[in-house]
Amino acid sequence: MKNTITLFLSLLLLVSCNQSITDEDIAKLNGYWEIKKVVLKDGEKKDYKINETIDYFQLKDKKGFRQKVMPQLDGTYKTNNLKEEISISNENGSYFVNYSTSYGKWKEEIIELQDSVLVLKNKDDLEYNYKRYKPFSLK
Image (cartoon, rainbow, N blue to C red; front, side, top):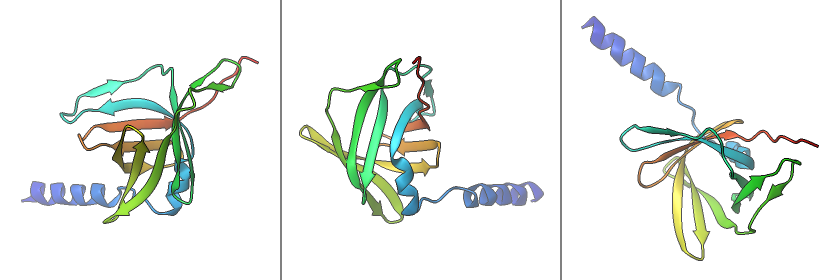
């Protein structure tokens, strides 16, 4: 019985400490994000040590774009100028990034969004874990 109560209280504490995302948090999405790892549906993890491209998000009033960019040694970024239009929606208390291109539409749930942490989950239950990109320069 003690073990059951302890387990219940531990789970309650864990759930209550989970960050809830607010409208104000959405602005934290702006900027450069580097993929850190992907967690597959079965729990397997794929770590990314080095990334040739990073994601750049730009939002204003919950609308904007995401673009893949390639950091250069001089501190600049190269891009192919392709942008995915994005909008943010709130569905039953959960926030989603809605993507739109000429090729299709899809959405990812925002699981976590902090100053330096972003976790997105797609319809296939893949969790994309990002960290805030820190630029480098050899100038």
